[in-house]
Image (tube, rainbow, N blue to C red):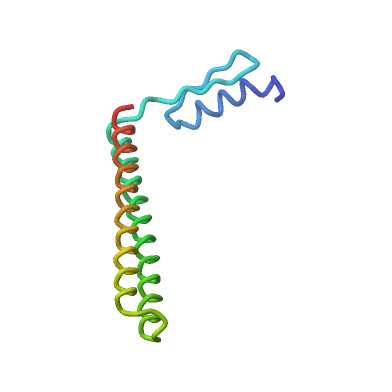
Length: 116
């Protein structure tokens, strides 16, 4: 980077009023970010919750498609009713396990966001 640009970059960042403070020693531009407010953290947690719900919805859509395939195979006589029931129960069990993992990751991230 051209060293003559450092002061211009510093002034541009400070003039942009982004809540950051830039400083330079002529070689490097350092940008100090403010500590996030509780409100910021709550927004991040809300966004993380929305993402976790989106993942759960995606899993449920996969389950619905898999259940549809099992029912079609049972209807066509490709698999017996007992096996179809076992497959449906296994699909549901796998779904619940993955939903639980998503919840664990979300709660861990929520705690991390709110404590940092």
